[in-house]
Image (cartoon, rainbow, N blue to C red):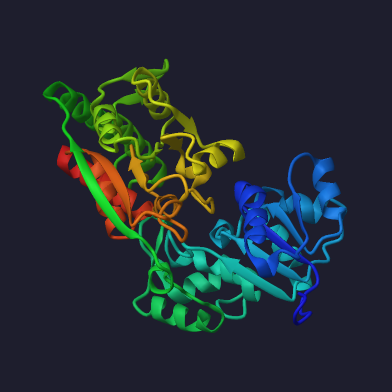
Length: 412
């Protein structure tokens, strides 16, 4: 911008908290960037419009407002450089945000996409991401032709195709085509990263709890239609079994509480930390309620990481325990100053959310020599299939359906 004058006005698009908290703070950290004027366009419509009209070098906006910016704001889209933080959030070509950006993409002469998980759910995701980057020059302009060239139907029922699998040559050929505009860098190769240690902590259900789990599994299986399992049905079964492994389940009335096995293990792990800060990741709302209730009984100070104030206080060391949901804080946040231990109360199916949440602590700037990731796993439950799928880096819809099929086979 000021050395080579290649660009004059930059738009950065990313997750809300990253746009609001991370980008402005990072620019202030680096000496060579301190001269840049940054305007963050978030908040009410009036606040966003004021930020977009303010003279600046870099404008930041959250991805949820991309459609508004392009179609409704009335502000000319005259940015000559575009930075997409967490490019993987544009992996679906059917979304409004993707279509909005594509409509103004010809106006942008320089574009950069940043992501740690470009194909977390398979090679199919790459098409939309590179369609934005090169307007279809490498992987084609149409998703149908990309699918025909590199994939074949996998799971199907009559004429309905549920999923595709890559052809034998697809991965190598796709990587070859995109290699000239792609830079792939592992943090462990270029940065002084702390050691990452992963530990599984097993908890066992009682005989009565095991009967409840098996009964629920059998009844859910029996309600599934014969033949191919759809993703919706697989997700229902998977979600119910995950909840039961955690110790509570949603029913028609509210929540039925089953056991405290994981809560007891969580308490042991927190006490074993001896006052060192611990980050706890949950998945279901009733998990959060039960975790916070247990921490209150133990008189352990904690906070929920759900806004800029709580994140700042965590990084300042004001709380020994913080509770986080990977769906709302899995991308871009800098949490490494607050601690080096993460406890997964419930490990998600999503490889992307799992890796990104771990990366909140295991990242550059972490002062501890070792980052420890704890998994609380109920033995003999679907927890074990999730851990296995993540270990194979295949936490996709296909892995979920395969696990459900395994449960049905066992049940029958």
